[in-house]
Amino acid sequence: EAGVAQSPRYKIIEKRQSVAFWCNPISGHATLYWYQQILGQGPKLLIQFQNNGVVDDSQLPKDRFSAERLKGVDSTLKIQPAKLEDSAVYLCASRPSPSQRGTHNEQFFGPGTRLTVL
Amino acid sequence: DQQVKQNSPSLSVQEGRISILNCDYTNSMFDYFLWYKKYPAEGPTFLISISSIKDKNEDGRFTVFLNKSAKHLSLHIVPSQPGDSAVYFCAADFTGTASKLTFGTGTRLQVTL
Picture 1: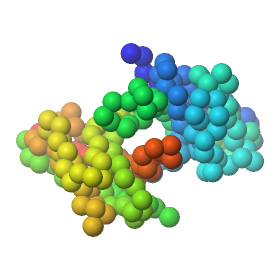
Picture 2 (picture 1 turned 90 degrees about the vertical axis):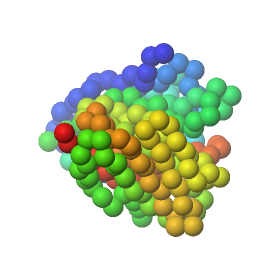
Picture 3 (picture 1 turned 90 degrees about the horizontal axis):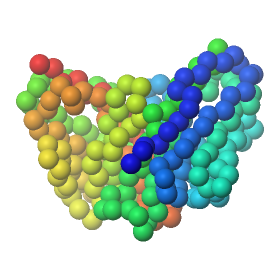
């Protein structure tokens, strides 16, 4: 079974520029998450999708961040314009629906995109 | 407000000995706890979990203990191996439709020869 795919793996931009990240979850996983992990901290949830609907975006800085999951499969996260403090690893995760889930309740993470804002 | 805390940023253990990683939480509504392991340049990978109805869960060399009254959980790795060297994140969850993980800040484990 293929894992969660993310691209690009690395991105360097200057402040005030725009950037977009792409995520393709594990096939059939209904729930998709975007996390921000700043150096020295744990991942922080930005947004959660259930199929193509937003479940929770309470911690998404909506003045500059946006995300979509058209057709309920892959997803993009955009930052426009970027700030220095957005430098972080952006992780995408997916989770099967309750009917698919085994005894565990875990999320499956992609490798992340490391963003550096100069 | 840090709801999940890992107060030890790093831990060094000799190969073959026991590694004990600790985690504290403040929100009594959490009912499911997970440990993830992260290698550099990779995403976190699931290691072991425990429901709040249990106080212990074991999987091979890994055991997680939960003390609900103290709002504390720990991960024991016995025996520790060099390949266990990684950053370990504790995460807490609410099961059901409200599920979303809250992570601690991580503990870097170094297993020395």
